[in-house]
Length: 444
Image (cartoon, rainbow, N blue to C red; front, side):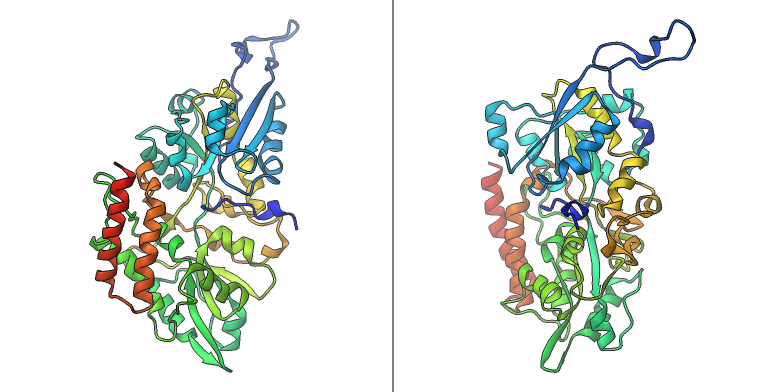
């Protein structure tokens, strides 16, 4: 099976509009003004050839970008030649230092601060208006997130996304005669089920539920980040953050579902589910689940658990945006290209390869999801996208820039609590204090 069937970018992080793909003019001529001498039918003016350079600081696209994106843009717009650069060929600082032309810079929202750090940002609001591009066709939270990030403007368009998924091992449920998780499950029901599945049998310890704690805190349903955007200080000791933190640590504190010094970190929890097959359920990034799960056991998908206080709302979305740079000489052509990537036509083609679309219409976006991936046949793929995403917490470049030291502080607090070394209040206070010291240094 080709690698492009499962391509996604993590951290990172996995689309529709047919009315927005008219190509920009590069020669100053309106195509509606050109008419043949012998009839009244309009003919399209031949557009001047242009080369659009796409770049991403993320890894993993060297072998797949042209197949998934570049060739499709060239097919749709014959006058456009696509050139792709990646972090595998040149790093961002070197890209800037050498003056290398970049027309479209694409990255997940978790890398979004790089756009402004290197001064590539360009507000495409006027292009959206002049091209009559209907943002309402796209998933609302991905648009609101971008507007928040761009101070009310738009630096780019979302093309695909990622979110949290709920994967489970059917073989373990069958072994113990327990019914599979159902769509619509809430956190209380999930924790009850995890307790039932946590046991020792035949000398083997089974954990009911494991997770990527970092992924689940970043895309938490409380929509709380690590820092206060205004003060640029830790919010680890606020009630809202405590709610998100305590929900995750409570899973590891369920009877029989405890973690050890060898299993509390991401690698250990992943190993229990993917390799050892001793964990019944896992909460992780969708793209990680889809790229890691093969045929090692019988698995399926259920909807991510809901909060009883906020039913119908899933985790946050983690979109990847294609951004037109301020240095591009072909902004209209670049806009036409990325607008095409959000059309129903392209989004469907991409979804077939198991990349999460960014359509507002969930049913349309998932109607053919994974059809090009035999492994996903008969899987509950409709459960991968919630009916409604939680509002994003990654609302500014400062919030994104603070993620790395925030992860370190979160992991320290999480480890101390799940291993029973400190109570949550103490762990969060101490980790928050260390984080504030890092933030003061970061934003001085």
